[in-house]
Length: 286
View 1 (spheres, rainbow, N blue to C red):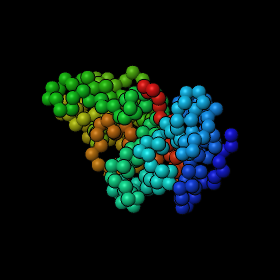
View 2 (view 1 turned 30 degrees about the vertical axis):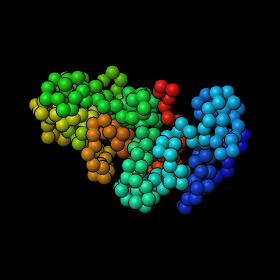
View 3 (view 1 turned 60 degrees about the vertical axis):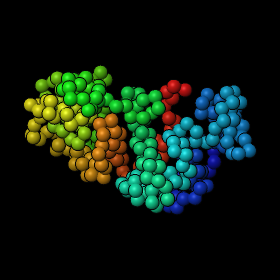
View 4 (view 1 turned 60 degrees about the horizontal axis):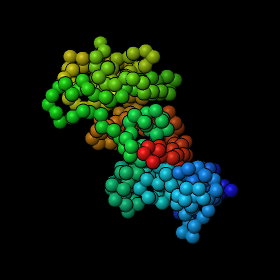
């Protein structure tokens, strides 16, 4: 088995073959790849360019069961979409440039965000369902019963910024309802809620519907928190102006994206995001 040769850095222009070779090299995919279903290395090629596993007989191609296969876009399209995503280009403009539908490019952008989140298996296991789509945590956003907010299972993240790097960690066993019960001052940020500093974290952050501010109005304040004074907060707000109508279940995806953007130099983002896209989609109900 030999790895296909390919440039070590992304080319400035893409063809179908250069994009395919670049992504295959980056993923370490060989000319006779292992079966993505059972990991068997004895596979053989078919006339249509696909492969078949000698053990489980699964038929696949080079990018099967990877995030990059979501949406069935060819590699050269993914290369252009990645550049547009990094540059913050609107979905509509990218769709027009590639002569694709809005929904196709929107799904591709969301796939990049899902691939970022999936790099943290413990987080993905809690935030993504069996189809690897975002879980809805609000018990009933349309319900007028205030008690439903006390049932909110939205996970809580600790966020801390130090020396220009942001660390974000999902806190095990913590949910939004736990933070509401603590004697902490709170503030809202779009579809999220955050609190005053709770060492070692600059803040605790979770997603929430607008109903919470009405129910827990006495806990909310206009005071400045440590999180408000950090570079990440202002950096994120600048980027969030690109996006419209973030729902609570999608907010975690955007925050994970912004942490990556903040921590990684822009010139390194293409190869890192490409590697994330080339990672395998978590196996749920196989």
